[in-house]
Length: 71
Image (cartoon, rainbow, N blue to C red; front, side, top):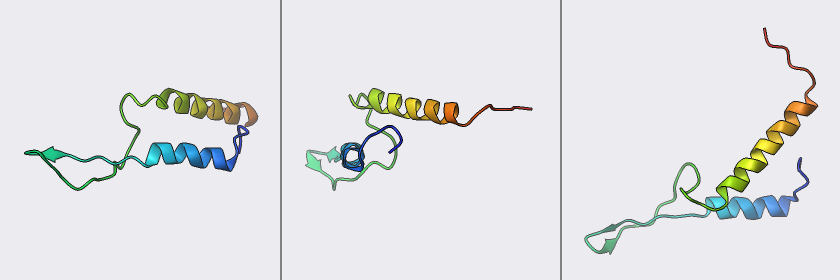
């Protein structure tokens, strides 16, 4: 992995982010659980760290790409 994290660590983080399901209660009865299709839950404590990891990875890629020419 680019930032030195093992594949096992990345798999664990992805399981924490993607193994969420929601259930809605209507008239006191829970409906069938469903999985969200986008994003991280609002207020999830891991979201700032994931943002920083992504920002660090992007910064590293930009530094290693050489000079950028924009016309």
